[in-house]
Structures are given as C-alpha cells and as structure tokens.
Image 1 (cartoon, one colour):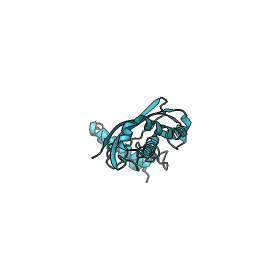
Image 2 (cartoon, helix red, strand yellow; image 1 turned 90 degrees about the horizontal axis):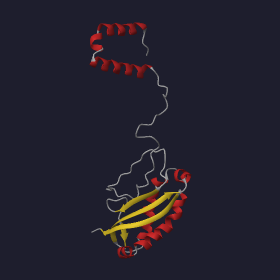
Image 3 (tube, helix red, strand yellow; image 1 turned 30 degrees about the vertical axis):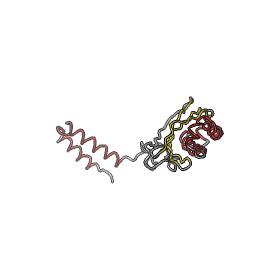
Image 4 (cartoon, one colour; image 1 turned 120 degrees about the horizontal axis):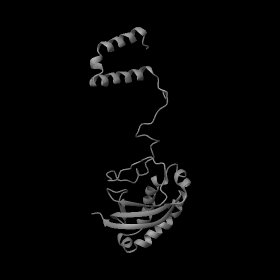
Length: 199
C-alpha cells in the first residue's frame, strides 16, 4: 500500500482548511497519533524480524528452584532483577520452614515443626558464582541449602535440636561447605533460630 501524490495533496489541503482545530490542543494530540500510525504502517522498522524483549523479559526466565520445596500458600515470592554487579561482602540469608514459609515444615520424628534457619556466606570466586551453575549461585543455593539442611535436621527430635543447636548447625555447615565452594561461596556460619511445634 502506497500513498500517491494526489492522496498527499488531499491531506495537505485538508490540514490547511482545518488548521485552527488541528493545531489546537486536541488537534495536536490527534495529529501526532495519526503520524505515529502512518509511521508504523509505512516506515519499516530497522529491527523488524528481531524479537525484542519486553520490560518484564530482560533475559530468559530463570528456572524456579523453589517450585518443589515451597508450600503453595507461602508468604514469600520469588523476585528476579537484573544487576551489573555482584556483592562481595558477607551475605546473610534468613529462611523459614513452615506451612507459609520458604519450605514445608520440618518433620521431626512425627512432629511438624516451624523452624527459622539462617546462613552467612562470602563470595570467594566471582567466575564460579556467575557461571558454574549457569546463573548467579545465590539464586539457587538457598533452596539447595534448605533441602540439604532438612536431611540433617530431620534425623533429630525437636528436644535434641533445642538442646544442641550449635552442634547441629556446625554439622550442617561441615556438610555444605564444599557444595557452596563449588559455586564460588564460602559458607561461614549457620544459625538455627526459633523452633515451634505446629499444632
């Protein structure tokens, strides 16, 4: 579809006859809308054929590491954002086993228990942190931490954990140090917080 010289002359004549309303506030709005539409129709885009990401789709969507462990009514939501840097200091990540937590409650010898647990880690190899797991390691390490910590915690009763928090936290740290190191982080410390039986 092309505009002929006659069509262009007709448009110009119409603009000249109706210049008062066309160049008023509403006219400018309508006129710019028509120009934008004509530009979209008649001027091919330089990027035509290349799919441009939308604002919510800056990159490939990340795999959801929480899908298998998070309860359906979890109060925590996964948020992703793009960053041009990675933090080099100590990172503290607090997590919760609960019916509304990051992961399902612990099953401690038949008792369902809500538990708070946190770990501290520090970046030791930026290359491994970004590339070893095909994405930034702290996107998936917390979920893996909850799975591996559960394997140890569920060997104990609630009373045993309450009486031996530090010893059990050290056991989890020793088990997970190598795993964190594989992805460029040094696991520094684990702390077990509140523990409450779910009735």
